[in-house]
Amino acid sequence: RYIGLRRSEVASLTKQQFLELEPTEELLLIEIVTAKSRGRVDSVLVPKMLLQKILQYIEVERSSLVKRMKKFNPEYKEPDALFLNERGKNKGLPIDADYIGDSWRRSANNAGLNSRFHDNRSSFATNAAKLARQHGENAKAVVKDLLRHKTEDSAEFYVEFEKMQSDLLMR
Image 1 (spheres, rainbow, N blue to C red):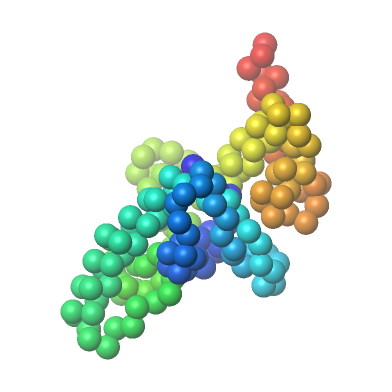
Image 2: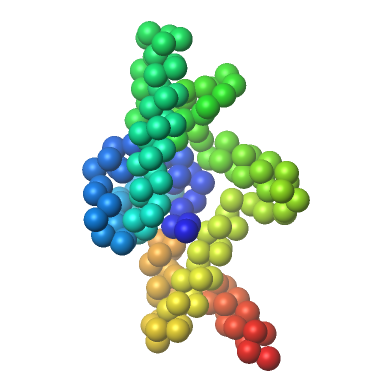
């Protein structure tokens, strides 16, 4: 499951943020610097299953890349970033938001889909609105908090879209 992060927020994640967590709870909190807030620190929920996958990535794929980089270049200094480029001229360096967007678009196109990385955030918000409505919660407030928006007005689109989907399915 996706946790509603923006591309720049994914690119700014660090390895240490995840190594400090213990996958004992179903949902865990990590603190991030919110992309559009000029340095404001926020918390996001990380499902246990996602944490386990990230820890496995750190232990296997990421550490293997770092070992190869150090073998090739003894001066290589392991970056703090969680996700590192695996090929090309930036191999071993942190990925950036553009890399995430470009990789997503390329993979979607290869699969015959028309999709942007941000569509995951929209799907996350729509699903959150649906669950909030089903549990009698204020869907706008829930979506606003989960997406880390300043106002409920910015969450209205997702809530209205979810209502429209539900209405169409009920016909």
